[in-house]
Length: 180
Image (cartoon, helix red, strand yellow):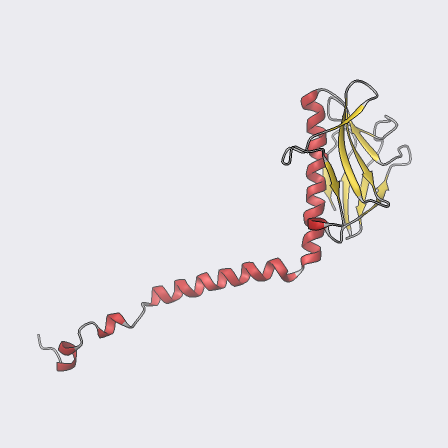
């Protein structure tokens, strides 16, 4: 086999200064993935924040229901739309005495204030009840069934309206929460 004179003089020249096609494709793929991830987070931030807040409230209502079943006590979640835009989770023990429940993450009293921090721009517009129900509290009994603040079982859906075109619908009997 015969080699050209330039190849003998610079045997590592080709491999030292070049990349393989696979290496180039991997770099392009990684850059593309990072670009897509960064752009989707900032594309529609207010809508994403509203969706995140609705999911948080949905999760907290579900937590309130599960807490009632676990403690075998009545629990409630109280929504205050004006002026504070807050909600709080409480449990009843002894009867007719409501105590603040602990947030499972922070281990502090379970109070959430909207329109600040992670929830900036999202507020509670109100709660719409079936005509037979009223109030700003949703109570769950020991079986997880939802009631209004007067202790009347939900006859129809209860809807929590957020200002960002998001609604949380609580179904009677089961207490299932859906975001619409």
